[in-house]
Image (cartoon, rainbow, N blue to C red; front, side, top):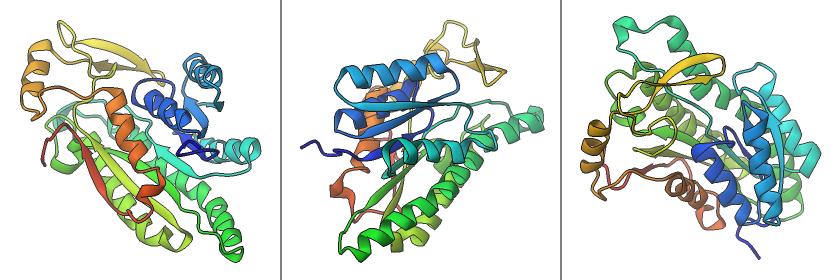
Amino acid sequence: MATLQDKVALISGSGRGIGRAIALKLASEGARVVVNDLDEDPAQEVVEIIRKGGGDAVACIGSVTAPDFAERFVRTAVEKYKGLDIIVNNAGYTWDSVIQKMTDEQWYGILDVHLTAPFRILRAAQPIMRSLSKAESEAGIDVYRKVVNVSSVAGLGGNAGQTNYATAKAGIVGMTLALAKEWGRIKVNVNCVAFGLIKTRLTEATADGNAMLNIDGRDIKVGVNPDLMKAMEHAIPLGRAGTPEDAANSVYMLCIPESDYLSGQVVVCGGGVRI
């Protein structure tokens, strides 16, 4: 039997990049996945890949920052699969600027996606997890559920030009630590993965470092100058940036039964980088 056979997993931002890799990894181990993306096409593509591989998945399209999204996301899992076992708060992007040039829109936009959205999703999920845990406890069954919040080394050590992002990613660490204490009684392991340099469309090396993407209706500068990318990789003890699959593997480790006594921890997935 697969490690996560029939577990129900919510993964935000799972149509592309790291989230996509997480969805495919968990599905390959038997999880039934609710895939989320801003856009329908990438989300449905991931769903189809999972189904063609013999797995089970459904899409929940929309922005995690929408006021009604959290309830809809959780409801999709409960109505489709009659359960909820794993939540991965992965959705996000960067919108960088030095503080004197950072607008309120930049500040709140990044806090909303990286901090407020996970808060709402976890708040919506708590009654479901509590109810399931109570029923299992009364039946004499031990079941541990998993929350994996995604942070960044920027949230642990800061990063120039990312006051908004570093603040949000530090905040998700605090949320993790608080909920690990609050949810232990209902047998939920709450942990956090802080990613280092992972190669995605947001960090891909570009000749001028001025690539743009439209994210949730906003034109966001993305990409890293190739020379800067080489310097950043050189500073990593393992000598390379991580792949989305590397990132997904670290999340997977916090979802398996072997992590049932691991809670309130922050794991750095950064190729040996120490903060």
